[in-house]
Length: 447
Ligand code: ADP
Ligand code: MG
View 1 (spheres, rainbow, N blue to C red):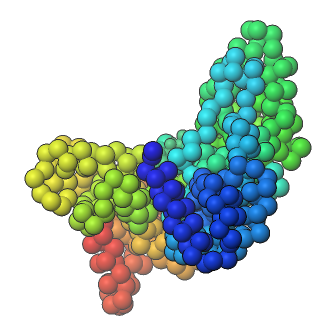
View 2: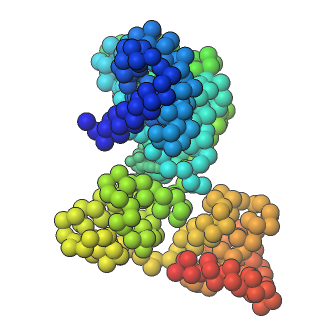
View 3: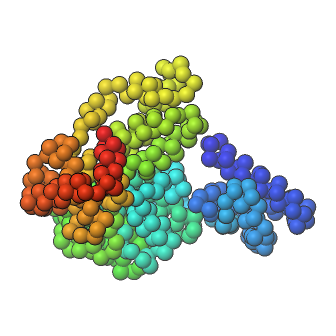
């Protein structure tokens, strides 16, 4: 039994005990209908309970409010009950057909990637909200949904989370999950075996198509043609398409304009590298899957977040390394900064203390709660402009970066703009003590 199954069993057992203690259900009814139900998942306040037959479903449904109250008491959080009949389990399988099997293009939706274990922060909130909205309003809103960002930031996780949420909410919907690379190979094999028309048609019945890493179809003319037709067929019929890529559609070289324009018709959302607070929350969650988080000193979290937050995969790798080292090679009861520094000896050298314009810009963004897009934009909103000026000034002060380079990294601004931003900050530093305090604080964080 996995930890999750164990947890669900435990929650359900406690809930049943509470239900019984209410004395609102006759003992016979309880034994016959309630005790055979099972809690299949508990995610984002939605409890999916599976029962053997329709009769069970109607009896439990009558007591929805009572069950929800008992679940609420058990887990300490308001919970919505979702009931399903066991037979429908078969239909929860991924969509597949003999042709897809033959071409080996179908990917399995990974149940361990869901919204419940996706940590939300400024860097990924837009993508998370868009993904869950799409899952709950399939085909009706943001179609296609296009999630883009660098590697290791959670795109595949969110795609799976959409699939899992749809399975949970609409078990009869047909979900296809493929990768861009598999699609290319599928087209190639189907062409060779003269089954291209069947291949195109095989997507027709889907309610949701998830395509991971669509950038791999770039430069493949034949694949473009097939994909364009599959895509239009689905979207024009209000069937949902969700895609991920490592960059925004217009930056994918070799992707036909007509496809780029179709992608831009829905909603494009970006995932950025996790900011400091999100990195800390991700670390806490990943650590809590293995040991009690209070076994790890805050300085350790700070150390890892500062050195490994280029992407979430690196944070995960760092947690693994930390736990591996502390379990096998450390005599201390707790995980201290000393243990962490030993664990990462030789690994953080390259990034540590290496200040760049990007690092400074990111620290200032974190301080003001802004995204990279906002700070480099043309916006002159006071808060954003102040952050931009301070970041430019600190790039001069701390690393003596050339004005031209700073301008380039801040939305391709002219070097004279950077000079006047720095002058402005210097003037304010002489007259405004609050300003001095803010800049000292940001500098402290950067260092
Ligand atoms: P991508 O597809 O963008 O390269 P993945 O979705 O494969 O990245 O994510 C890499 C790893 O990081 C996965 O194990 C994923 O679960 C984890 N991850 C990414 N973002 C988050 C997040 N916000 N919360 C929790 N785990 C995350
Ligand atoms: Mg991926």
